Image (cartoon, rainbow over all chains, first blue to last red; front, side, top):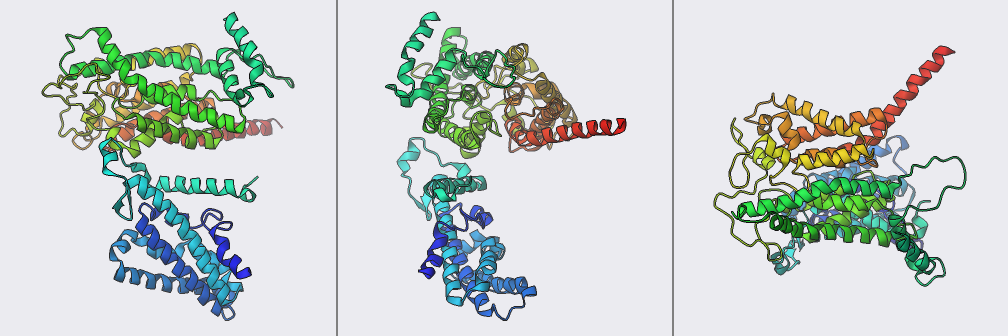
Length: 204
Length: 403
């Protein structure tokens, strides 16, 4: 039961993006298309989960005064591995994501989970927590990416989904959706919907 | 008038709690207070009420907009018949009717969408209907090109009313001017329908009126559009059939542009109405023009082969594009402008300066008035804050000196 809570909590009630409002920068930067959002989501899941496990295993041997440095080294190593894997197997997407894969290292969610969870829990719980938070983050990224690509480019994963006849009738893609401000507004709308379903999260 | 009052009194009980149409109370209240000044007064404390409430203020602004709107309608027809080469053979009223029919759907769409959202929002929250959209709804059709599709205006209006106004708390709470947010949304979302050479002059017919083919040598580029694409040290602005234009043409406004903003003359008539009735702040209008003229004069000193707008005289700069419209109707919006007296001078001056700077130095944006006002909207609270702080500091010093 407790493990289930650790895994599923971050999906909704304790979502890192829409409740804790962490990791917003990358949510804005990579979500103009669905494919990079998807790849980014998987990369972050892998990094958070593995970093959580490694730090959790090391947690009793890390001196408290240098723990941030140790965490950074672990996260940086994992990020480099992810970056290299992407370059090897998904070169196009890796080019689209450009610096943002490297910047996973500065994603507040990663360091936040290490500090708040992995340092005080066993490896299995830490793994579940990492997967849960990664998925919670990725879920929002994919929802944002879905709306931005659909309304901004009329495609999903690069395939045309808005029929050509709409364009012949005068429909046009919304160019603002491609620009970063719209990602903020889409995230805000998700938060709006989420809070109206979860009244206990509403601030007074 | 009496009969109307009696009729309202008669049907009023239906809308009060327990009545037949109780859920529509806010709609009824909205219409009633639109027609008659509410009879309710404050019951506690000392309050001084002006006889003019915000609905009456809005009505005056609408009246002030009418010269520019009517001129804009005429100009839409004028540009159209000029483009198809039938201007000399068409009567004044046909030209006006063409423009009227072309502009009317935009006004309707803007009001139906905007007021619809306001009514639904008020109804859901059991609030009174707020009057803020009366003016915004009239401004929106006046600041778009004639060929912007109606569905785009509908989406942009909905976006602006929800995200620029309702989420901030409704009328009087918005940070950004709602009409300009609508225009900014359109500008960034659908640039091909908001700028360029193909949207400012309607070449097709409107409801079957004014069919014809454009004459040879037609170009739908606005004067500022021509400035932005100008090459070399010479600059001759032309109308849509290639005749050169003068400063007087810019001032009168029979030039292509967004519907209501071409005629500086009509806008100044509106400005006089606003100033005489005391609705708009003369400080803001004055300082926007001062900032614009001064910056435009400074800009005449830069290299015109790089920045073609440097070839325009300061007077041309403030007559062209949306500058005058923004100065009179956008910058003076009492909600989004600075509120302190000193702040109004600073705010207005920077709006004017910024508009010209964008226009001259950013060739990607031929017109900067919209962005300048939105930008300064964001800074208005900061300006006010420092004006108030400075005032407090000065008075504290005086108090300490006398001690």
